[in-house]
Image (cartoon, rainbow over all chains, first blue to last red; front, top):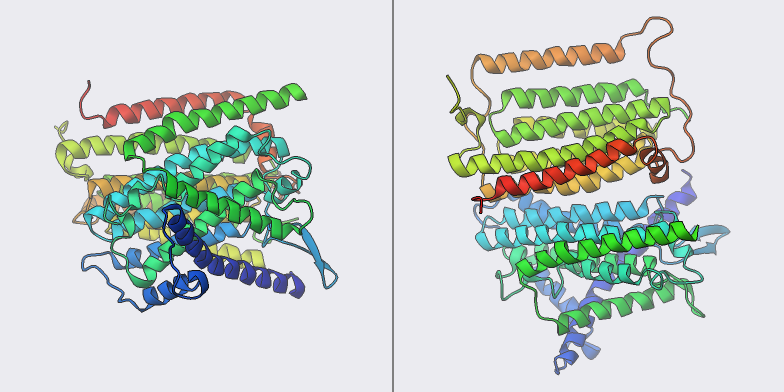
Length: 328
Length: 103
Length: 170
């Protein structure tokens, strides 16, 4: 491994990390403004122009708060749990392609941190490990509501992971590869949302459930279990959980864009810019869902995941397989 | 492309992990920890199979690991259901306390 | 050289976490250390060019089976038992037996074999070794029958778990 590759990798890691750490405050601001306007109010407007600096102010406030450790809490696990959430979310960002290659300094630099040939499996693995951040956070707080919230939330996540993975197999069958770069490249003529529309719908619903967002946010909603698994976390640990949730949203949006919505392909603008535009539209859709739908009750949620989405994704898989075999 | 680490070392590591699992099964009293030690032994066996598969350049080792994982998943589900059922009746998870059929 | 360093690190983490699983008091800590073992073994799988099996290990074993373990430990609120190890002669026998097993395994692996037998040199690998395509090619042709039997086994396990965990029968 020569020096140029090493420098390239380090720079790319910093760029993506900066993108996530700067993107999350922007997403939070967008959410508060969009939710506000959808609820017929304005949202933050005083701190900075159009309230843009509101999230920075909130971040500074969270940073300055007292870091409380519950007395009987398990110290090591309590310390590690938010870290696990953030690390898995950021690890999943490493395989998402932002564009095709560009030529700089005489080298072809692909616009992603890495591309393993099992990139999609790596992503599924990283999101599977993200469950631990939630279940351990709930348990380590040594308190009833966080434990229940953490267990409910993790049961929800592992249930919807199945349908999410199976819905992606249709795309994998069409492309013939698990590599996200290959899948992105294969959508030059036709976006996969057209042949795999039902898989796209199933994937989006499962992603909303995976990231614990409304209408599947029973486990962390304020009116339900106090604040769910992150009740007892204050200051920086809470900020880390918050960051992990929005980073997860970016990851699943990135995967949906890469697999179904044409990755970086678009008419005139350069690839990465189309990626960001699609990402913004997707995140707006997420926020729109939150503003519109009432929350699902927990048994409705689990029944929906196991009895509706999983059979639907299996039917989609079978139909895609039959179609591809018949087509030859 | 020959591996820089001789493949015997992988077998030795698998042997060490297997032995630690055996110690766990024989010496601990909590049913859950015994179960976890069994999973440790299964993992050691998986490692051994994958190392042999690398040596013979055959995918059969990977296939066997695939089946071992599927069977381990089934076994964990049933085993934990049994432990839950016993715990519900006797409020204990120690294997020393489940001796109704004794002598 | 990089590979040797990685192997040493991953092996050290695996052995350390395995010892922690067996000798720790709190069951949740033991489960987390077992997750550590599983992840380091997944790393060793990648060193052995078994990338699909490594991904399966993380997704299935570390991501689903161990979460199931943690659920049971947390819901039943099982505390660490006292004493930690079984007392008396049984403990000594346990360690002795494990030592015998260990010596046997090491001897089988390391002993130089008579002429014409023993482990050959590592054969060169085809380019897609360990990839999902290579595994699928073998799984659905040569190993199709065990594959179908395994699916029935999993169905039986699901039904069995649901029946065992019910509170009363109808």
